[in-house]
Image 1 (cartoon, each protein chain N blue to C red):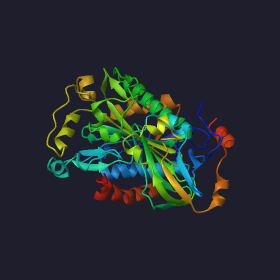
Image 2 (tube, chains in turn yellow, purple; image 1 turned 180 degrees about the horizontal axis):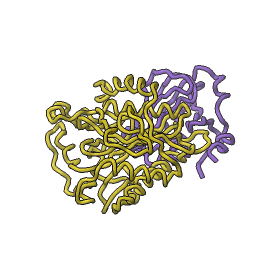
Image 3 (spheres, rainbow over the protein chains, first blue to last red; image 1 turned 180 degrees about the vertical axis):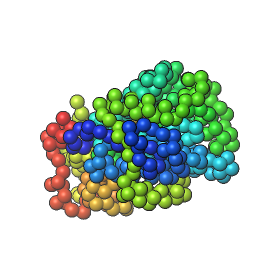
Image 4 (cartoon, each protein chain N blue to C red; image 1 turned 90 degrees about the horizontal axis):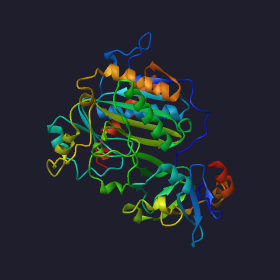
Length: 289
Length: 128
């Protein structure tokens, strides 16, 4: 299995990709709202996987920030979903469904910002060290906005995946980004051939409780405690996505001692993402379990 | 310090190979070092009996609280048995990776490939 790899450590600059990755960074590297062209779930997952392949081929680490249109429920790679979520109910609500390449549980991507880190495992010290470091970078960035965030403390041993039917944001795993014990960022990983993909959802506004509306058995009762929190609640108002991205970019640059250089997808990556998007759209993949 | 039993063979990708009582049939799983690096295992995706894999083919995945990792077949052969108990108790991979946490048994197709694997000393150096 892929948890370590030979490598020479992190290069001096990482790539920064925004949205669909089709628009280059502007002169000074400032981020314009125009670059945030949201994409459907299948294309977003395909772009993440195409970038993972670039890292496996020896490319530099990448940080990508993106949004989703339409709203989308993403399932964990191994999550049992066939008897749990209702595709028709989701379609009626205008919500797409996609199965991620990464582990974990269901996340509703609506009024949120997703981050993705692609890097050689050796540069990040293995999956658990990477998880801690990436979450530390997110905390550093969010604290730069004055937010009272921290990483959750360790919890009791998790049971088998099939015994956990709650969505991702119901509870925080050790190391995840929380504010006042409530989860602000939910993340998941995939390790493949010496490279790591970690992506996660940063809640801007709205409610993850809508996930319950998509249950096949009908709307589930809401949990007694609201396990998640949004940036809007913490800041008492809306934060422009560009300001959030600049803050997080600073957190990554500080934590990893690097520079995030804005750029676009290479031609090969764009073409590969188009191919991979077909698999992510396929019902055989989405409803494999 | 990770446990590296002296009677097993290993891969750089942190799988191990263990002889069984049947000639040509080996038990495969992930090493103690690997389970420690992963954390709590919550799901193991395994192939079916009868499937064949070449050396280094992906034969399954292991998920540990959010992180999915591929499992690479250490040696070419056919799957003859799968550890179905991992469906209900994947934590066995953490608590007993060389015993109850075994993943598949494989009937190897090329004994010569055994020479490509790492001995306990080499693997011990690999994981530091």
